[in-house]
Length: 281
Image (cartoon, rainbow, N blue to C red; front, side, top):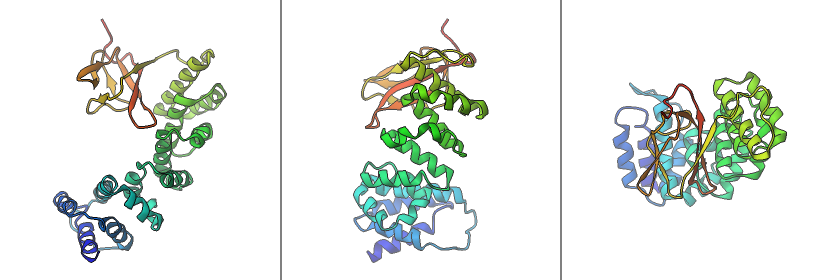
C-alpha cells in the first residue's frame, strides 16, 4: 500500500503539465488492488501547491478523470467501495464523471443525491446518467427540471421528455420553449412532437410542424466516429455501421437524439430535418 500511495502522489504532481500522458501510462502499467484507495487518498490529501510552469487546471481535471476512469474499468467494485467512505470526492467532476457510469445501486443513490448539488454541471450529468438507466424516479421529475437554472439540466430534461413525456407535460415544454436558448427551444419542440405522435394529440398552433425522423438500428450498431447530437448531416452521410454495412442519413438533418436501451446499446438515431443541409434529389 505504501508503494501505491507513493506512486499516486507522484502521479498527481505530474498532471496538468507537459508530460502527463507518459506519467499516466507508467502509473497505469503498475496498477494492483491497492491502487484505487491510494489514488483516492492522494486526491483527498492534495492541498494547495505551487503551480508548476505551464500548469493547466482544465487538463488536470481531465487527466484525473482519465485515471479514475481507468480504475473504474479495471476495479469497478473496489472504486465504489472506496468512494463509499470518501464521498467528499464525489463533488469533484474528475471523480464523479467516471464513477457515475458504473451500474450499481450505490451509484444510483449518488446520482439522486447529485441532483441536489449546487454545481449545475454535476446536476446535468447526474440526470443524464439516471435517464441512461431509465430511472423511474428521475423520469417522473422531468417537467419540473425544465425550470432548472442550469442549461445542461433543462436540456437533459427536454431530451428525456422526448422519449418518455406525456400529454400533460406539453404546457411545461411550451413555457420552457418561450424563453430557452436555441438549443433548448429545439429540444422542447422535438419533445412536443414526439409526445403528440405517441398520444395522438394535435401539434400546438405555435409548433413549426413535424420535423423528426427516427432511424431504428439493429443490435450491435456502432456510431461513426464524430456523430453526436447537434451534428448537421447531409442526405447520404454515413451515421453508423451495423454488421459492416453503413447506415446513412435518409435526409439532411441535425442529429436530435442518439437513443439507447437500458443496457447502453444504441436503439434509434433521431434526426431533425434542417433545410440548410443537403436533401435528397
